[in-house]
Image (cartoon, rainbow, N blue to C red; front, side, top):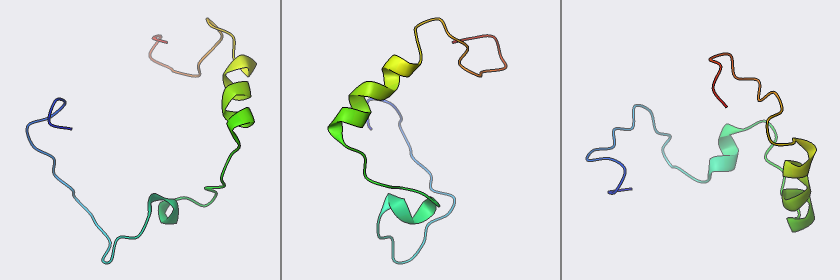
Length: 55
């Protein structure tokens, strides 16, 4: 992270901190196949859902 920022400030942490999955309602494991198939569902240039006009 040092290449991206000089300082990192965490506004809120849980004690003890276990894993990132505790912060999500659904953090299921996905297969390698799913990871490679998902991008093909969204062709390049399709609506990304961003409201700022950038993709």
